[in-house]
Image (tube, rainbow, N blue to C red; front, side, top):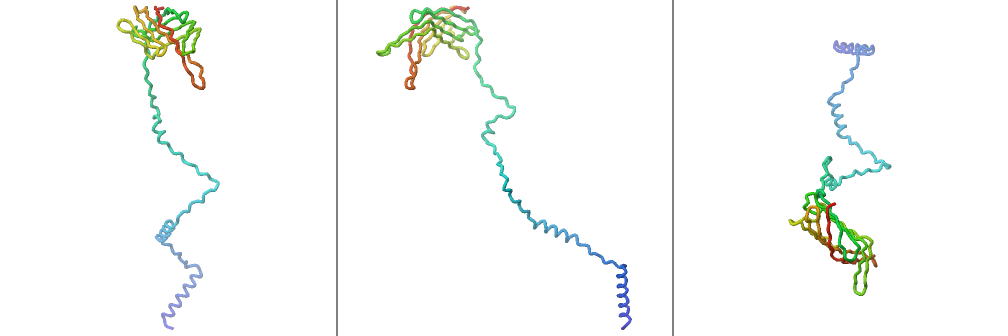
Length: 225
């Protein structure tokens, strides 16, 4: 055994003795940070979350959809509602009333005229007849009507007749006649009235009918109250 072999053997035994006495500590290797990041990245990249199993007791809730037609027709919040324009009624003026000179078919009657405030139009008219008794032959049948009182009123949103330059006027009453008249002054008028009374009969077999009784044409006069 040469010198170098003895020196190596002595050094080895010295290290063994020092390790057994706790003088030499074994170092723990520090992991490489780059290797850890790589492992984390691999875990995140390869991990795919699995959807939760559906609950058998849960009930799907449908999301209501907006109807576009309702959205279009609904006015915006705070928008004013458009007003419907109607003709403005003319202020009422003088009221004229007087008797109707009935010759047959009724015991008496009255007429009432209401002018507009400017005196250029008729705003409203009313007729009243009392104790009406009339008859009409319909083929071989003779029809009769008897009424204690009959009345008719006509008015419009503005007026029902406009006075001509001479104060004359005509008020049509449809299938119930016509009124002709003339104002001789703002407080006096006269004219004639043609009266037709239409009586509705009870329906027979679901179909009703009407009978018209022409009472004739009578004169009338009216003046302001």
